[in-house]
Every structure is written in structure tokens, then in C-alpha cells.
Length: 438
Image 1 (tube, rainbow, N blue to C red):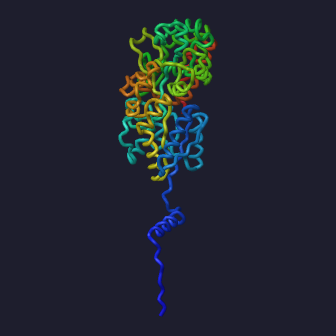
Image 2 (cartoon, rainbow, N blue to C red):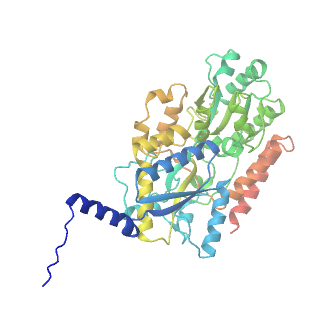
Image 3 (tube, rainbow, N blue to C red):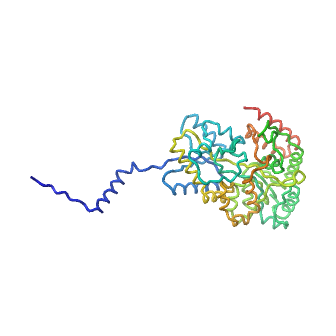
């Protein structure tokens, strides 16, 4: 009888062999990351900030991998999404879309999952949203979030510190009244920035929408369309203001490039004393040297209101789409939760100029950040409080088309082709027709 003796390897050898076996044979069974896709469109500076955050998220954990697809304009995203939906192809998990002043209509589309639905199953713990729920932006009538409020901004007035010093203006900040600002622009034109005392790339926002909000007036009837049928009846305040803007363009106090980003570039290049534009340009300006600037609120008319009101919230959000597996929805919520972490949300706020995502992000931003930014901290803080009825927002059917029409009408007037009364009367009439169309 033959006795077979088997050699028993030392424990250290056996451990090594097991490790090799797992790496070779068990790799396929290892936990794979869940891929989610995000479609977005941001200016070059904010694009880089977002990309850096996403890269950090992908490095920080192995469960989820976020893939980004960038578009030249936010307006390009929804048509491309609709193509995917129509072809019954896989859609991205998050898309940056403008709610077009009618968020509930967008949330009711079969390819959209309201954010509160996603978060009911996969809640984000300890996130106190910054913007008060009474605002209409990206919320339904019950105050529930319909989209992730990541790209919310407001129009502000940027001013060049050096230009105001050069012009010898005291105090060296813009006057908040339109007529007081006009006097300053004359000095700035004569002594500082002859070819660009002031400019804007937000003509409709500054001269129509927020002319109402900042002067504590309703933009449209029916409490801004929230309690009745909206309609426009631009009163004497609008007529006088547009007449003033026409005179500013004619006398070259206001450079009128329309919606061209040239206005932003010119301010960044120290060519203009004042720029009225979105707060989401702030990150770029902070990183631009040798630009030194501050921020104040948009001008108002003391004859209309004793204290200026707050502009409407603007911007876009990240909307979750429907039709994905539970694992993908969970991964989407995990990514959003990571973005709300105080350090990440504070980075986004400080480096872009979008409003803070959470109260924690605002609290985590120290006074050093605001040191040379004028009134920016105060302009932001008000949005954590319930807004007045006139500043909550507005709801208007087919508003994107109306806004484009308003822009064309304003451009024609500012170019001297039509007087203010004719322009506003025609704009009001055309808006009524557009609202009725499907």
C-alpha cells in the first residue's frame, strides 16, 4: 500500500496565493461603479469649476462614476433630450434646463422626475436649502423642490474700483438711483472710461423684468401670473425708464451690445466702469487680474419706491430624468448629496457667483471672501428669507418666446428706431398673442 504525503505550504504562501487568485479570477465579480451621465452648459470659467468638482467626486469614492457632456448653450440641451426620448434611447440622469418660469409644467413631463420624488426615496441628510421655499424658482405650489437648485443667480451691478477712483467719485460706488447713476456716468465718461461708461448683456432682465421687481411692482397682472391671467400694461415708470435708456445709448453713456458676451469681456478687460449682468459671472471676474471690482444691487427709482426690492431669481437647475433603474437613481442622489456637502457647496458658491446651494455653504463662507466685493453678502442673504409678493417670481405661458420678442423690441428702441411708448405698447400686445398660442 502506497502512502501519499502532501506538502502543506506555509500560511504566508497560502495568503499570497489567495490574493493572486482573487485578483485574477475574482476581478469580474468585484463591485462595479454605477455610471451616471450629466448634461450641462456653463460659461468657460464655471465649466472648469464644475468639471473639477466632478473629478474630485469620482476620485473620492468607487461606487459612482459621473460622466459629463457639455453643450454650447443651455438652450441646446432640451431639444437633444427630446430626441433621446423620442427615439426611446437611454437618457442622461441629470440635465441642466431652464424652467422657463413654469417649473410645474416641466416637472409633469413623463421624462422628468421631480427632485422631491427622487429625494423621498434617497434623502439628502442635513442639507438646509438656502433659497427660501416661497420663491417660485424650481418649486411647485407646495414649495417642494422640482430640480436641484445648483445654477441659480441674480442680476447685479458690477463696478470697476479703479474707474471710480480715477473719476474722483465720492463715495467710490455706484449710486443706486437711476438719475444719480446718470450723473456718475457723465463723470466716468469724461475722466475714466470714455468708450464704455456702462454696458449690459441682460437688457430684458434689467429694463423690464427687474425694473418691476426692484421697484416693488408686479411685472405682470394676476400677481405676476400666480393668481390670475397674466397681462402686460407697462405704465409710466417703464415708459420713462426706456426713454432714459434710449438717451443713454444716444449720448454713449450706455454701450449697447445686446445679448453679446462682448459686454462681459469688456468689463473683464477693464474697458467699462459698470456692467449690469448675472452674478454667475463673478467667479470669472474674481480670477481676472488686474481687475478690481465690487458689486451693488440694480438701480431703482426713489420716486416709485422708498427702498429697492430684490430682483427675481434666475438661472437653471439640474433636473432628474425618469426611466432609470433604482441603482442609477440611488447613484444620482449620491452625487447630488456630495455636491451639497458644505465644503463642496461653498466652493461652488465662492468660485462661480451662483447663489449658495445650502445654508451651510453660506455659513462656511468667511468675511475674507466678501472683503472687496461691495454689497454682495447682503444681496445674497436676502434670498434666505421669504420674498415679497412682487419678488417671488412670475409664471407666464410661453415666456421664452415672449422674452425673445421683448429683447428684439428693446434693441429696436435702443438703436433709435422706435420711441418708448410705441415699443412698450407693441410689446404688450404681442405678448398677449404669444401667451394664447399653444
